[in-house]
Image 1 (cartoon, rainbow, N blue to C red):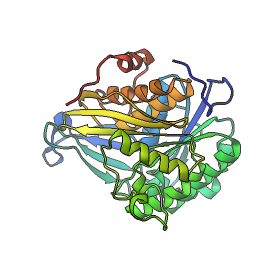
Image 2: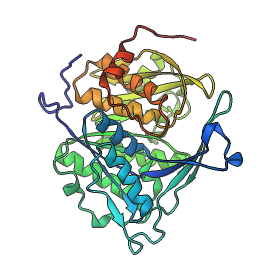
Image 3: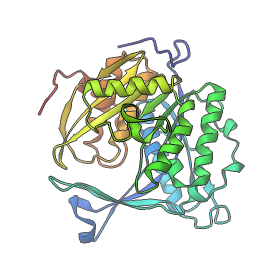
Length: 362
């Protein structure tokens, strides 16, 4: 399973991982109820970057999360949940009303889909603590001292101008310090426009080593693109191997600093049954994973479980096909777990699923 990984320092497989983002309160009606029918909500916590830190910590990776939360019971409860899963939260800022006037923890409501009915999300995260904090007070290079891997996403910069500055400053500092940097485009249309996401992600790409979530029509901007070279409207969400390889090759030609690209592809047969596979560009080749078909208990965080599984496999020097299959298997297992994060501490369970000899086609 081992593979010499050019992104890792020598043969060192001991990594210190840090990620930056928002953690939110998640409120879900029980038993697949619709929000308009609900008389109670189940409370949990989640958010893309927090999900990844939590998943990696459960797999034994030294993981740290940086954010800003209000210094109240909600903020402390969110951090307590992460700490209970072995995530280091020492850098997290507990803000005061003077620092973040609205002084609130962002939240979202999840209406879980079932059968032919899709899930629905309602955000309530405007003016959350992380969006109001002045990050000029944070020594970003010092924050990253001693870490080997930084993970960021396109969700945090969508929250506001201060968060965009934070992400760019972190990318630049990480590159200066020689950290491996992974970035997930994670476009959220409820938070910003396609044009805003595309333009900002384009600024980030020169600092990225490992790229996730490659829907490249929102990840680059080139005013000289015309026709075949412009993938804005030309890449299907469920591409063939040949289509994906063409996109990867064009992307790497434009951003040669990127050492690896991985994206998962979902086939939603219903709200309760999905299939997943993934594509990866690595060391000059495009790889395609197995196709997994499975029942869905909770699909929120499936992409984060894919990214965390991929990061784990890469950190531990897995061979290319094992890297991509481990990542998809991690995501599949997460779909059987309620909540945002893949709380799986048995690496062998993921490996066993990864190694199963099935490739179910519909």
